[in-house]
Length: 85
Image (cartoon, rainbow, N blue to C red):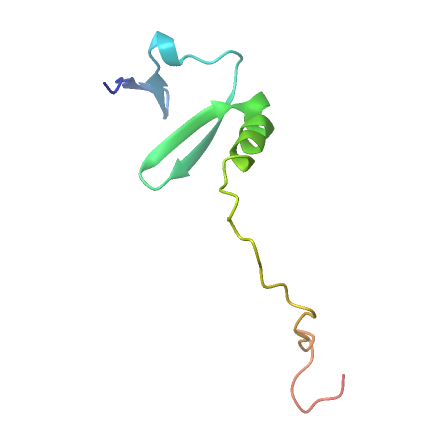
């Protein structure tokens, strides 16, 4: 079953009252919007979450990758065609 949280106004901000089972330790969380969803995660655990996610890729994930051998050369932004550089 999906848990439900209450929304309320706190001054000019919108706040979420989390059920007890979803409460965080500390004073801050990181927040990220993914499509229509909003994800909250502990600020101090941001790198731990990423590190744990890295191990979840299949062994055949990107076995080969195209790596350019040399970057594309472009004119300087201040240089026009036909004018000396």
